[in-house]
Length: 69
Image (cartoon, rainbow, N blue to C red):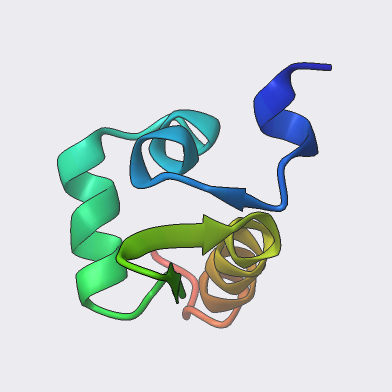
């Protein structure tokens, strides 16, 4: 298990790496509110469980879409 896996909060870059996406995409997800963050002093951090929530929401949203023909 890596250090990133045991952290409670992650930097934007660490969160992006954990999801396997780019930093710019991660910032866009944060800006639109799709991934929640917290501010600790002047630092913006992503709670690890918020990444799990985001993926769960993706799974839920994809199952409610109508079947494509």
